[in-house]
Amino acid sequence: MNYDLIWELAKTDFKIRYNGSILGYLWALLKPLLIFLILNFIFSRVFSTGVQNYSLNLLTGLIIWGYFTDSTKMGLTSIFTKSSLIAKINIPLSAIVIASTVHTTITFIINLSILASFFIWFHVYPSVWSVGIFIVYMLLLYILILGFTFLTAPLYIRYRDLDQIWEVLLTLGFYAAPIIYPLSFIPEKFRHWLWLNPTGYIIHYSKLALIDNELITLSNLIPVIFSILLFLIISIYIFNRYKNHIAEML
Amino acid sequence: MKQNDRIPMIEVAHVSKYFYLPHERITSFKESAARLFKPTDTKKLTALCDVSFSISRGECIGIIGHNGSGKSTLLKILAKIYYPNSGNIRVNGSISPFLELGVGFNPELTARENIYLNGIVLGISRKEITRVFPQIVAFSQLEKFMDTKLKNFSSGMQVRLAFSVAIQPNADIYLMDEVLAVGDIDFQKKCSDVIHHFKKTGKTVVIVSHDLKSIKAFCNRTLWVDDGIIKHSGVTTDIVKKYVEHSKRVSSHSQR
Image 1: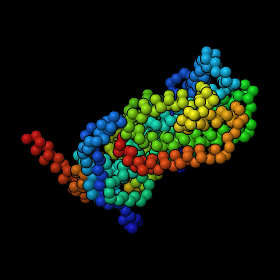
Image 2 (image 1 turned 45 degrees about the vertical axis):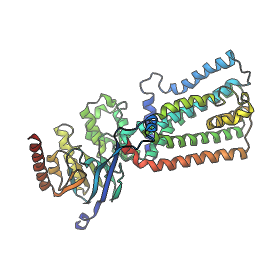
Image 3 (image 1 turned 120 degrees about the horizontal axis):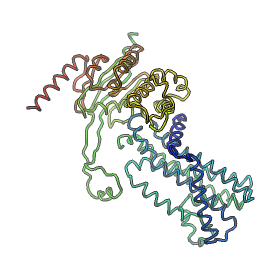
Image 4 (image 1 turned 60 degrees about the horizontal axis):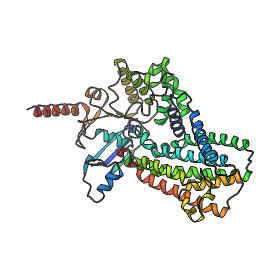
């Protein structure tokens, strides 16, 4: 694995993304906070949900969802945006795919420290176990993002419609995940439909662990870990079958 | 030393490469859906057909041919950017490709940042770049502009910077595609010095060029690629002579 290359590509993406804006990198932190302020005003003042710790639930959901949205959008176009490189030099494509997930992950980790200060502000202190299970969920989310990127980045070379479709699916996913509402708002018989959105599942149980100190049992977690790992393996397998032909498809 | 000369650095055996070009490229779901039930009319383009040759250590090989003859495809296969449809390639050593100067250069980054980015893309480690950084800067003669963004560089300055990085990897084989024809006369002199230096230190060099003068100056052996096959190969002076005669005949024929 070429760490120098992954790091250099990720650093360049990062510099270029906020290049020329006055607040620069601050936007990565400011954007989710501003969206939070708007939604928080609407759902705790205008249409009150009456949920305990609503703001904290909302912010946790938004930050995790923001990470998923940002990473998958960047990942989908990651190979395409580097096509000038790929056509001219034999560069490991896996490094390009991994690099695209690195800088969004760093932004996410910084956002998490802001989230932590909100927990202190609201006097909600998760147990060590809760934090531990939350870290497991975030690792699962990362593996999900990586799998998605390995699968879709080569496909995007051939099907440029994918980013439009993905944009719409992300909007659907946002409302089909317990972010602006708690899971209890959904009638029991529809809940399993919600788990078609794995990120929604991760968000729900992360909030449960961090805010309500409710831990999922291991027997419930293992099938989730297993299916996400399987998804990554299948994605990498497909990626490896296509990678040698990508340069000539550009 | 004599034995060393016979070691094949690159062995290309029966290599063929095709491209399947749809008459109109399908790039959206709707178009592919519309074509799902129709037989797709792709055109099979043979870029290379059963090409075989070998290059020994320390040789400097020229590849010439008209536009679209398959030279660049051949070079891209040697650089492992394209994979052949059939045939084998054995490369005995590390390759440094110069298919384009400044691969990965970003106009929004400074010269210093671009040196690191380009160097790492070319496969040099970060540590190694830091070590040779003064050499790169000295060779490019751009000491004063290291913290200037690349977009403010003239194209000549960009090329100088790119070339200075590109010569750094200590590879066994150097592949060059039309990189000799850049920069002013002083810089071209520097480039030719570098190639002579490569030859002196026993490196293997492959040059693709339309500039027959530089092919004659550097290469002992030349391959003439035409329509996906090697039409002629041999001592540079002979091949270039045949090539020039052929070109003249073709152009006088088309004029008539």
